[in-house]
Length: 387
Length: 248
Image (cartoon, rainbow over all chains, first blue to last red; front, top):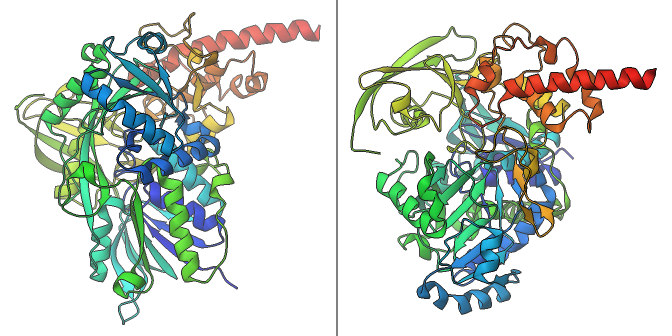
């Protein structure tokens, strides 16, 4: 039997993880991406390998996904991760009022935490706000977004996946009855147009899923929700530092290479293609970030950027929407065969998002092939370029 | 940042497939404190969807967005427009040199990745393998520890290719390993990695370097490849002398 051919639209975190999973399960895979690897939301992530503790009180489904995937990614892709852990620090009495709920939530989600005295915390991280009242260790980490994605893409490529980068999907191919049988592509590197036919098209375009589904006359309830992040020119801690409180603006500061990155804000938009970095958001980052690490005020801004989260659901305020993900079989939802959409989720859960999506695809084709990505170490990111 | 607005002409190198290259101009209103990559992305978003350019993290951790800006190699996500032009001025944006062009501003950096792979450059290493801010280039004496274990961090070198583009030697010797690669070998040390000796101690290795230090001038990530190549020469001479005694 010849291999089933899957076309994956998008080489963000979800797309590359799906390509890897599909290739491991025996599919022929073609990835079509309009820019380079992770040029959209995924590349511009904060870089926090979540322990799940941030969601342990309000969004336990996401929290449990995060802690499980955190432990898997540390094993399968160590060369993209700084595995130094994180701290949640409580500074004000209001923060301390969150302490009990935080302990209960982490226990419910099986996130290992340990409470430190302020003195112990300051010994570990001398640049923390000295007014802190408590601190909890959590198994956070930091990752390099491009190298994380390239490791998945390299592994997919070694199993036969073909990547068309700088190639737009300009339309979907149909069978004349509205079912999807492929894509019309425009390779912008060579200015060539061509068609790709496949057995299934996977729409893994994150905040842009609506652009693709609209080509089939389908709408998906997605709220593009950007946030601003700012990088500063000095490494002031070894761990990711989180505010012990419910998720809010600028309450995570994390080290990466020689930098600190503060994030983020949250607002909703219509079109995610270009969102400016707003000056008042940058100011907010230094104010909130220096609440956790006062010495940030003495550092120089190195970069400021914006990324658009693809949150599932419409018209609810950004922070109240769950950070979990959803895969849609458009045969089930819209009676259109041949198209699957995956969106939502977080960088930390990219592998799991791919597993669930490929499970759904296997079920459609009556295949019973188990997922093995959790046990399969990824190739070095450089193998995407070097055979 | 300020409310200040500048008018800047972006002059962008364009090339598609086998077609001859050309330059296209776009006049943009910008905030001078925006970064060069923001202007390039806006040209794609609002003026010309056929433009291709490489980028990912927008804060200098991934090394994807290296370009030549007014003839100098820059990581465009951390290069403020204010620092490279003036109000009413222009910005010439070209792809990196010494790599094959895929299209427009995108180059194929396989040459560098392959060589980094050959010297098995580490992507993540212990804190002591490179100093933090303000401690000079040598490893610090006091490395903070995490309950006995040393902290790990992502390497300084982000493999952006700026040093290879700026290197006057890399342009004429296509097999030259290049500054980033020799710096990665130096960082690991020949003493603990004797298999690297033959790779770097050859005509296409560190003796090809003419000490122009262009690599160090353009490095956006504190690697200082020029200094590291000189130090690697010292290491090579040391290993050669040692081998001479061992053979005798």
